[in-house]
Length: 151
Image 1 (cartoon, rainbow, N blue to C red):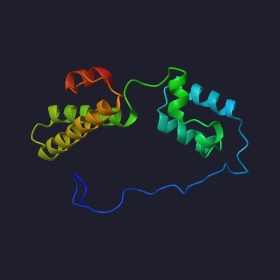
Image 2: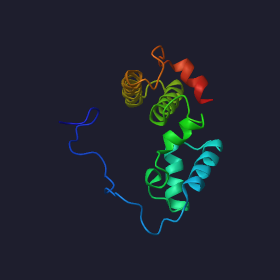
Image 3: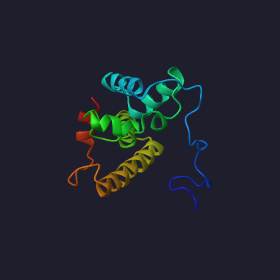
Image 4: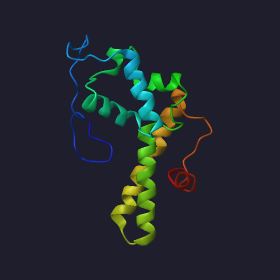
């Protein structure tokens, strides 16, 4: 089956190899990793950025293997989990930037199409998160609210 907004087919991205045990070279304790995650979250980093920083700077390949919990579970236990998931927040930022561009360039039809596609992705993802209980069932995407959220 083809992808939704492009004509390409195929598998998405690469997949990391399964690893049942922690590598020998990883020498961080679970408490130390949790403290790093909490500190980075308080600095305003997203969950994906925290994972990348842990991997690249601290040598922690898999948080779940070290601590027994995912980054989301650790943040949820400490009430540091953001109200909106990272993926929907990034799409909202993209939509707000496209709207600003279209206000300055109203004849840019390809950007108008891109805005339509991005906003439909936001609505589809919101429907999924409402079904899973991550978002409030009354949450709706609107440009005015999104612009206020991003600023």
